[in-house]
Image (cartoon, rainbow, N blue to C red; front, side, top):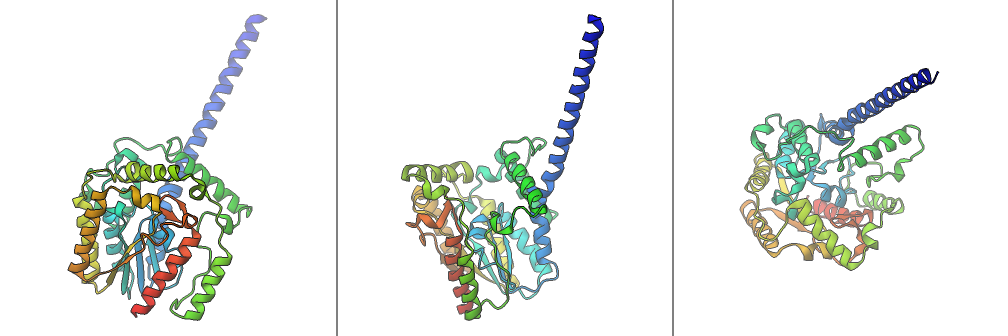
Length: 356
């Protein structure tokens, strides 16, 4: 009797274990299946829908710095917004090349020119393979032959398991939950992290329309992240320095990347060859971030941009110190919040309209 009870317990345990493993494997496969869409390919589809068959006058290309700072400027019918994470100079070039084939009437390109673009830091190499995967996949989307250009710079040395990796698992889980709640209409669009809340309209140079748009934007601002504002002064400097060194490779004696410089210049030349005027934008940064940048990086980057300005006759909109003492305008060490975005968007809109 005891023997049969023991055998029954073993069978029960074995069945339970098999069921647990099956559920775990199903969950793992489900999460991995969602990862491709939610982490890597979602933006590609977004960009493809933006550019196909569209007539645009202005394009914005940059990283998340520009996506944050110019979110209200780019929220117009005549603006093609190609700013987003991973858009380093190689990807800038591929995006622009792809766009010029698909989009007619492009006249002006606003191109980001922030410090971190010109260094091959950990965010864009195999040390942080989620980022390198993003660069590789986005590059391949815009330029199928990009692998020949990028070589091993963004090589990923091991298979990716996004649902269990430290850098990607929290993002994936958060997006799956948010997507599920949106489908149930529990989570409203206003409460999402996006800072592009308003309906698009054309003719942003109409002062009355623009004024009405900005006033409505200010009423709808939702700032639910006070991370940067609440940090102490010392913690701000520590966070800024960590972002620069661990994220962008902006360390003492860092050298400008020949590959990044080459493709940044190629993007400018491609625009010029297609009769598209180029305006460089240097986005606002907190005081603590600016003061933490190594002097050699400031000097080398500034000199490089000055050379480009003279060589190609470019305008440079320099907003680096626009909010340097206004902590309330930032949500982290290198991105403005919605309040900051309204101010910068107005500045760039005025520049564009005055240039017509």
